[in-house]
Length: 164
Image (tube, rainbow, N blue to C red; front, side, top):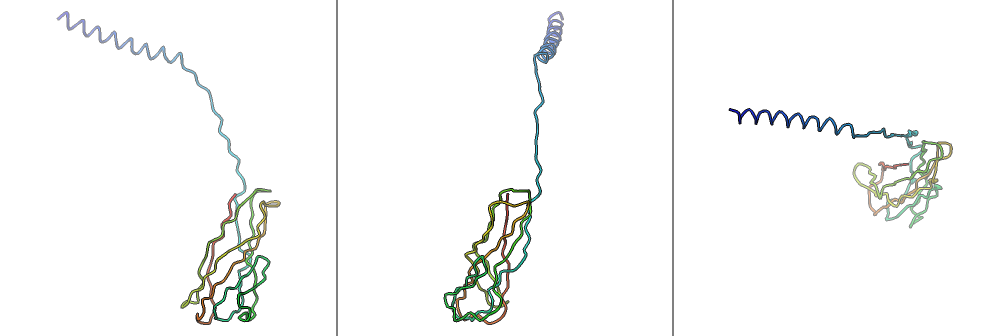
């Protein structure tokens, strides 16, 4: 019996030392506060102002280019049949004089519901930074006509992305 009592007393004593050990280690701890910061800026946004228009073109094989100034040229200029060609125009709004980038697609497809045409080689004339929180820029591209596509109005969309 004495042996069992000693183990009990020893266990209680060790437990008390353990608690005391934890209590004394807290007296050795240190802490401080860190700082968290953030600066919120006006979110960047983009709006389409005018569409990219290639105008009227014959359906023979051709590549028609609209540059960022809205000038139309073609590998076969005899197929250019009028219309109102123009570059697409976009307005970016955001934070002050922040720098931004423009990402254009590699290509897109426009369709008349039956046939498809490819628009590719997109270019832009965007400035590198906003001026007083805004910037306008134009987008041009090439329209590829394989030849023999059906006559009619072709339409489609392309995505322009801006980032700070």
